[in-house]
Image 1 (cartoon, rainbow, N blue to C red):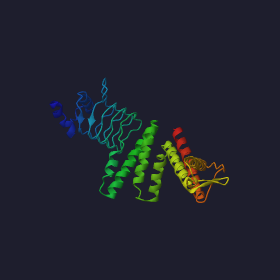
Image 2: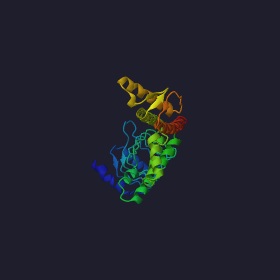
Image 3: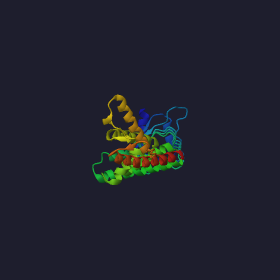
Image 4: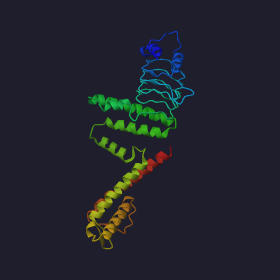
Length: 304
């Protein structure tokens, strides 16, 4: 352990002997199975380096290291733990990153074209997004959110090209969220963006629309139950109920009317009474919009 710690000084300080094969040296160091920490590999040419821990269920560790502009094109990094490392502008084109751990990495400008990214362990939030939440100035905050948006957009495009549509959808949601964070607070666009996120996850969560529909239907059912409905001269309302049976019967009629109004069926067997007409018009408009949104979102997901 001590021997490797002493030898690692050349790796952490970035002092490389120009006569050595850097790629071969790193592969040899990895086989010791001692975690590689704080390695300085900026601008290193590690094209097609093999960092796969064959015969083991765990991969090698290259953590908290600096791989700024490092060339890892075609590298074999299966299950490689790169957590906490700076991969800024690193080249991972055509690399194998199956099951790699990229949590806590700086991914700004990293290139993953044609890389194998199945089952990569990603952060819920990139480090720029985390930093933006504690930024001390508005300018710094916006700049960090812009960087975050760029990272998410790059990852989303790469995942789409690789056919990883579920992962791409998650990155798209984060991308749109970062774009919203750059808008002026309380602005109309920011409010609309938040509503779209809440209602359908920016088109990635169609079943969230079903939940929203149920909430709208239930809300207006209670509203109609309180404001009153009429059918053949009979009024259905919470205030015309004289028993538990009538209370339940009137509420079920209000729920039925809310459903047919939301779906814009409008059978005409039950009619709104008084101010209920106003609420019925609002629910019909909401229903038409939400149902159309569901169709668009559902088709988008199914046609991928």
